[in-house]
Picture 1 (cartoon, helix red, strand yellow):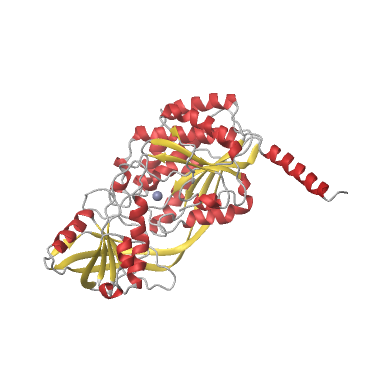
Picture 2: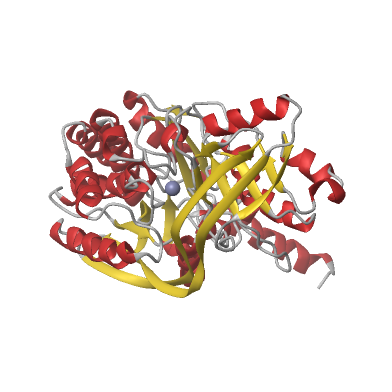
Length: 476
Ligand SMILES: [Zn+2]
């Protein structure tokens, strides 16, 4: 046999299997007709509103590992069952339990003034009586990075860049970076404590909490967010050229581990029950508000969409899952547990999109799928175009915070981008309450998800989920 023949044969086999694998995924006409009916019914359905109203009224704040963690899970399990899902189950999630007991702060010199602060999640407490120290201010994380440790040691570091409202929420990358990385950087330079201007876009005197992280080997230091008007106050006093001294007292910290759970509800597919579309949101919230926009609405949107699909005369071909994820806020623990538990059967998760950007109108769809599924995504995009959603075929679709871990191990993902112009006015504050949700815009979200979930479940062919397939665009 000539030496080239095996190579040639191998080449032909590769070509043949590549052609088989590349048969374009398509959405059948009949499915598009049903999806158009779902879309119209969703615009007159208040299941999602009732879910959000119920969770925020009957449970309220849902700090991960707090006393409402189990109560919220029981509430959501009962609701899933009452809504007629075929199967409801829990999968355990273990994480460090962080507790907030209280906090207060004041400027003690040169002018005595109270300051509105909230401790950051995973911050340690201060000694009783607080820490009193002079402030050293930076206008960015890079400025703190460049600072000489002598200027920082023993002081309270303040980092004060301001976020601006944007439809795509783009400034949050910067704001959350200051919050998550700032305290660790400040500690490495010997700071006594860390303060930031809240990662938010409002001018209310309500601070925005959120998690921080300390790198391995770094001593955790007390860290808190100032309301934006209090950050302005500090900056005005600093401009007078006088040393500013602050007293910061935080009573909080990590108290061992807690085991909660992801709660999963499923509509069983008619012909391919082991393949599924996945959506939902996270059940935990920060504690000052009632977690309406972040993220009762996210689960509610999935619930509303699945409930409409459940009322069709027959189940779709594939299954549809709605997940209420555990502890997203303090480090994506629920999403990571789901990714670890389901990595081995990643091809079963044909496509997914989580909702975690409030409840305002969805304006754009982007996707990370295999090239031969692009036409099917274009068909899905066409079906949600009447809802005012544009298709950007060039940007990736990360699937959302809790689904980022499962996307990173190979699940094809969509991003259904919500208008986030108002979101960071209230995110992680006492103002995250039900009144911030516009029922009409919430229904538009449900309509988008109902169409997308149904069409993904009816698609002929898959979207390219396989181990490692989208690892390069995974994110948090
Ligand atoms: Zn969230």
